[in-house]
Image (cartoon, rainbow, N blue to C red; front, top):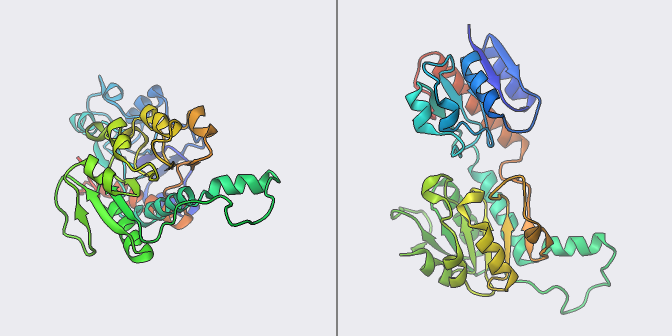
Length: 319
């Protein structure tokens, strides 16, 4: 008998598929992350768990957990830095994720933030809603033209490449990227030899690296100091990839022109300093928030669960 635990509400089609595949499905209705005691209990009570962002399956959760009933954590999302993969492996728990399903939706949000930040769209909407718009005139809310500019992409994986294609083919932008290795790309792009050289060349710096210890605070004061004063910074990766204090400082002194953020260092807490600045576009982690995308992610996670509980190697195993 297979008993699985879904830690958040999911689209109806995903729930229906889970109920087809498993004998018992428990759906948690709460949208807040699991607490440590809940995670430990889940490891003991269920054959498989479908967790997501915020469910911090840390080494502490797995401590003193030997041979748990749970054999698989089928993460809902491509990023899994909230799960200690090595600790899970040591406890005999497989970890999976949902790559591919999120690529285009996340790239679309990057483009949304590039355009909103450059063209002051958030500021303009607030003006209209406040009844403060006095009508069109030639020097009203002048922003930065996007077409033909240079985009610098930090991390040229699936999502980075999808952003680059949109920038190059859709907006005629030159592409510079920083990546651990050279990439064989199907569009023109120049690999920067350092984050500083990328920052110096780009009108828009877009972060698209995975989260985790290796990329924690990868972006900080040095990068912001190297950026052009008219440049914009965009983050659709993970919040803790960026030193938020350094970003705030760069914005407050006008070191960079603006920022577009979909993720934050301590979600859902967003610093008042960021919320107070008109030149910062703030989205509530909308990267994959389209119904068909969340359905595809859910289906992928459920199929990973199913494969693991049948004793097969899941399609998207990460450990």
